[in-house]
Image (tube, rainbow, N blue to C red):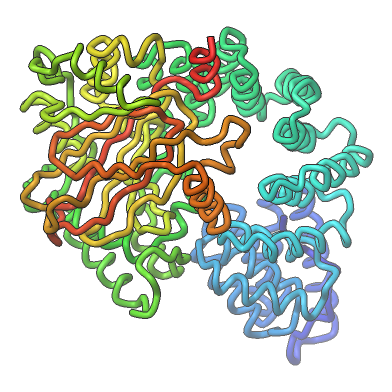
Length: 613
């Protein structure tokens, strides 16, 4: 929102009195036209004022905001900068300059300017809102909450502030507070679809499914702009409550409402996956991925994973780009300048900063690498292989018997993939720039089914494995799939169990990369997570909960089983068993990074019910 306040006393040097009055009248008419949306008349008036009196700060200020509205950002920055230098303590000018700086990605400078603006005039709701959004995008939740509350204090009906505050409160599981803020907003504006949609999500997360569904449908019926998002969220809610047919229809309706919505396509992919249609699901995920991760795309520019980084993430990306250049991949020809920009950013991060610590990318660096950072610069097409992707020599009966004998379910298979499948999958993982996930304490990077890790070869492996081992997999469907790529000495994933029935983990880095024989694989304990534990208890890396897991395993006398690393070894086990990545010591080159692939089949609750019956 542009702040156009009352006219301030005009300083026009030594102009004649009549000229001053004429100029003030012209400026007043131009501001009125600007406020009414007549940008042509407003621009003509501002130009007339500035032609007669180049030192008119108000005309310079408002002309700068008009340029901003028209997308002339460089000219807007020049004019607003001139206005701010001429009148450095004008809160409206500072607030609008902060808005422009934020819009052009200069968040650090924007924050400084906005702080100065609200220090001079605290009642500026729009300035507080921009501060809240900057801090929210940087992951500074408490600071963002405080700013959103300031907006509501000075502008109770501000729906953007209530939506933002409700979203932040719900993200921190303060559902009742979120609902209160949103319901207060709806008393002021009962038909507001944005507030209704945010309230629906908060109610959904709090477990009030019926009210959430009602609100999702209300928004979908009444708001064309929010219809796709409301239907996608409705589909997600329906899936969680075991209504697959209606979830699929809601997701399809979301894509019909807006075929450019990555959220709609992802909802469709999830619904198809849980309906046992993985190939169709992958196609929907690919559409969402293309919309969100194509270099230069605007859809994801405000996502945290595109505004933040770490030393470990940057090193991985630099190594991968250099690898692509060495392989003479056609799409990588122009990556050399980008590698230099990444190296320059890495060089500015102090040595004392841990490799895995996440940092906000500085404004100047983001201007250079932003269109490419955490985007799909290159995707290696990797089709199904001829014949079977699995080693035809796998003895299904022997593997199944071994799994059952190691109660409550564990075995491993050496020589898991066929040579062609192993070679092609390894090339896919080394070349494809889909390693978007990096916010892990161990510093490893991850790629997921929903965002690029879904080539036809992976789907072939996931399809053939249950057919090869029906006594283990029964009728469990593929529910999730990912890969993690590690540095040479990174710590791996700590103790956890998974919300699934069967875990499949296999490793594809050559054995020659391992520096310490007998390590680098995984550790599994032979005790299941307690049935009454929730996912935030058995699948979390919180230090206190890790201690609770260790105490539980010790009290149960759990046996620790180490499965050493071996290339093309696949470990299959009951997802309820606690497990962790073993210590990692691999050679320090890009090609020698440890890569593990994980596939999850079935769900935890369904599997436990099946075993009880």
